Length: 376
Image 1: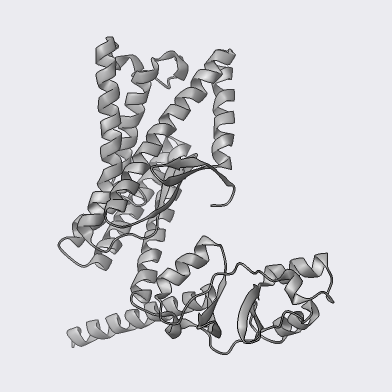
Image 2: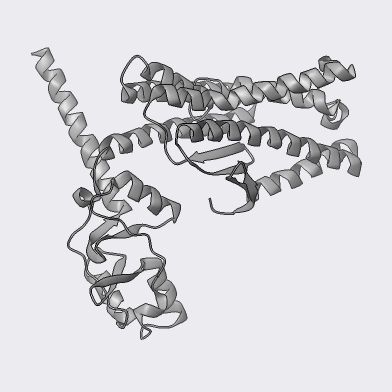
């Protein structure tokens, strides 16, 4: 993820923090300082936020470790102002596995709340001490630290189990529906429920709390993202690269100039070019690299000076979904398709998107046709 830095590895999984999370910490420190007027209050508020996000990391690790048990790797866990995001390589098609992965995070959060509540009881601190946390007359730093942490974890648990994407409750709902029916229909139903919650949050937020409007937008986008991911998975399931790749491809030689590459761009629709030497792909000249090279070296510089040598390649027989995942991982738009070191074509994100849209249009047409036949 852009603007994020690695903090280390936990359980073999990379932990990252986004720049906006650091901005959140600075804003919270200022808020606590203004409430209480002391540096100690600011430090206490930031410490509480870090403890809360430690709980979030454990929550995401719950997802990741159960996913690992089913053979699903986790790319990383990134801390954002809205919480943590565990990026799984893919969501398993088996509903029982998705259900177990989705419930693992809330189960960890529940365990944290119970352990903290047990510690409070051991120390003789009543949970009700933090009931007034967040009121205008009571600074957040005034309530006992552990009591606050219990209540916030319980709140996050309840909110996260709402049956709306992208919360875990939405995935639980989808998996539960898929146990008794079609996975695609289960996703569509869960996405509709998510959009309904988003509308509810938006209406309530406009009347009472603007923060709920932001949450509504987050939930709406999450539901739309899941629906889009389903459409893509349905269209690409079992499809190999050779069905989607572009075979008629212009190539460049390392010794050609950027001016030659510019002529290729202006003469056609291709933006990224495999660089071929002695019949083998040695690099890729992307449009962004071409523009950067023109600015730094001029039009007479060679393609070799600006091309990307660490490109991601695909093979004709591999699944498009796997090749597309590699493209997204490196934020690339194009991958040369290579067999025995020889160029066969190019797989582009744009071409894959067109394939998905065509598939969706054909399925819609077939659905309409079947409904008309049933009506006749």
